[in-house]
Length: 161
Image (cartoon, rainbow, N blue to C red):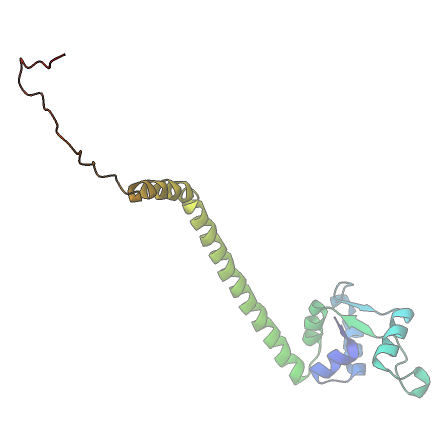
């Protein structure tokens, strides 16, 4: 939010000129675009920013406060060169912002698609790792037996019992 005096400075016009154009085009400034401060709010603001009091040549009316939409609309109702340039700049900024959001939306969609594809991979990878671990366990070599071994190869051979 921005005060009318600050917005007028940004657009290169006097606060009086800005407020005149707002008054002439008041239907373009609904409550969510612009509102006036209350006396209490303005009193608190005066002490914070050291605004001069009425008797010292300061403001005689409560200031208007503009939201970002109101600031853009103010650029449209003002006819100063700077206001026109800033209005064009703001429109371009919004177009770029929309492109960025669209690109991010596309990236988000692709990430979600990738997550769906990889969802079952965790189970498959876990099974694969378990199989690899089983294969990595060294096989025991058959131990060579020590001593004399009798092989039963003959058919009629009978051991002494």
